[in-house]
Image (tube, rainbow, N blue to C red; front, side, top):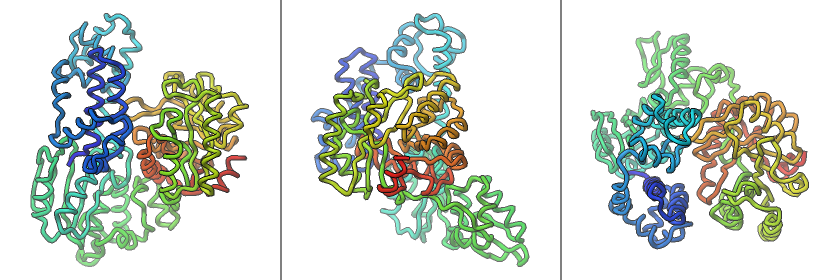
Length: 574
């Protein structure tokens, strides 16, 4: 029942970290990290590759790692990993999950202070004990404590991408084994919130008890928290809580509305119903004037109609004014995944991508896109194999050749240019002028002041060759919070300079967030929903960025890459 790709990726990452703690061969360490990165986005398709004996087609996976993946798939364990774990104390591996803590520091903490778990580390940090170690300063201690808090918050909730993956496994299992009339995931997952605490599943079945038994006995269920005739709650083997409710057809819409939420949205609906002499709950809408007669409940649409409201999409149900607009039938027409015409932030193996330009282009064409921008990193970002000016010539020649072959599909010659600590671009204007699209991004100096970071982004917007600011707030899930910037000031300049801000669809980023999106819309600044793909499979993350845009009330007219190729090129030339 578990996500095999995630499990393999986690084991390989852990192996790499233990090897680093043990001062193992750097090439061996990198091999595990590369394989972990390539396997993680595969999802259910990993099992297909195993069955077809095509694991070695995964970048970085050779015969040895292929056999290890098969062992994990067959037994749920890897003997090599289990043996390796015995070389370090239990709990030390957990320390490596703390943002800003690397293997060298963890080794120092263990060898000098015998710190073996997060609790001991927090106590040592708060008591001042860490400051006795060479190289550990007050700022380091502050960063460690902040990292522990980020980790704690991350354990309370899971990312949207992970929640979708876990939910889909259960939905598929129940659909395969039961005769179901309807089944759907509700809660914050249906509202596509960027993080989810637990997963709610609703279904209609003529055999509720059978549905409950199938759910509680499913593969991957670690613990049954509750089990009744029509509802059950379990923890899966990753300690994620999943709740199942079997509801009657008559009440399915009411239950779906109620369990989708949000809490504040539901309160607003109950208040509105009261004014209409109605009452609403998870079982339906009932008339207060006519002895609680059932009025509606089979579908959400009929409930909204009874309440005199336009249908409110799940992503909007936050009590941000959507109910009032629904009364006027004046809700925004939200963007859809089908509105996206291309991806303007994609990497190839010219820099740190896993696939060639040709392979990335073919994958984009299969998605029905009209264009893609190949935005490899710029020269100073050595860790990502940033391109020198000389290497850009070869890239441009290859793109020109491929464009002749694939016309009318257009490969846009592009870059993700680094914004340095003073706000200057990593390439001179003479080089930037040659690109079809320029995406600018901060990759270093995250701890600068709010004023410095804001100034860097404003200066990037003011460069006439910059089209898009990538992942503008710099956040990384369970690694670092968004850095402080004056977004209002940046939006003012972005509006003046016709610079778009990116919604980065990568699961660990989702940056801009929904609130930022609404700010951009109100400021008249376009967004661009990109995947930041470093792998063909990353292209599938686009739906996560679209979900963020929808939560931010955005329409296709607010989005740069919802434009056709001709209109995009005109917009970029402004």
